[in-house]
Amino acid sequence: MSCTIRTRKFMTNRLLSRKQFIIDVLHPGAANVSKADLKEKLAKMYDVRDTQCISLFGFRTNFGGGKSIGFGLIYDTLDAIKKFEPKHRLIRNGLAESVQKSRKQIKERKNRTKKLRGAKKYGDGGKK
Image (cartoon, rainbow, N blue to C red; front, top):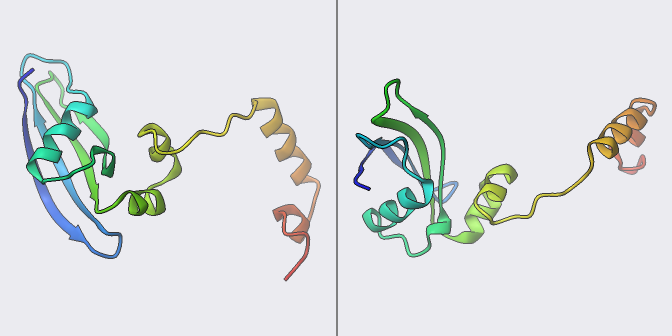
């Protein structure tokens, strides 16, 4: 499938050891482009060895299709992506495992903590 990729507002963020940008994807005649395809094309554009260091999210397709706009991050190392990226995006990219808790467990724990006050509520047991 043919698609054109353009990046805008490109900046290097040294504090978070990443490059960040807005990505415009032109895909006439196609519904959408998969993030895996976009990662491969961006890896070629910016000479990235590992596609797991690329994080793409927040895509919105324009009304009528043909163009999508999203946000992209290229981290310098895998350690940096694991350190700075939020957990839900790490899980989406396959870099972390999701914790499987039942809905009932979560609700019971929430209701138990409602009955507690102060330090006990936050799990540190009152230690300083």
